[in-house]
Image (cartoon, rainbow, N blue to C red; front, side, top):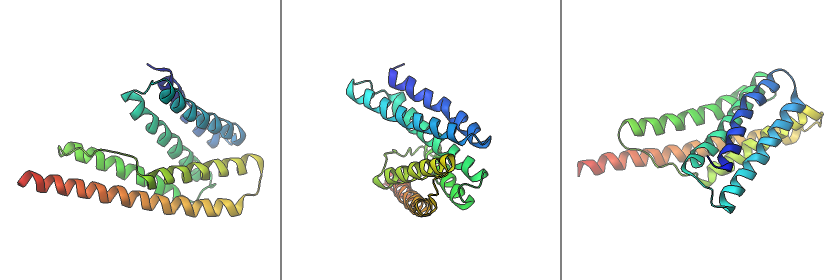
Length: 183
């Protein structure tokens, strides 16, 4: 178990804490935990690359930790009406559909290689910035209505674009594999 993996596990442990803090109205504490999670993500990535501590476990665990945090924050912010329900459903559905596609490709013995796409990275940034902005706004009464509306739109557009890109790649992969096996 490397140090970056331990830091990532700490971030996974923060997920239910942040979720609970949001649902109990402890927004400032939730915002602080969100910032700590963000810093830990940067630190574990830096350490892994700088000291060659990259592991296969870390390659899977790090994006899982990030997705768990984002999805839980979006769900909690949706439950508390801080984010529109339609956006929460869109964000969660995208991740569920990607997981279903990966599992289905494994079950059909045509595993899909998963590589982060540029649009997916933009989507993650848009979602994180939106979540952080909403948390800061709620925690400190900053009146960020305009920026939150813009970031909501941006997160929605990048979520749909990312899902479409992954779906296109998955369909091509599954069709190519099926065609190739008949040749």
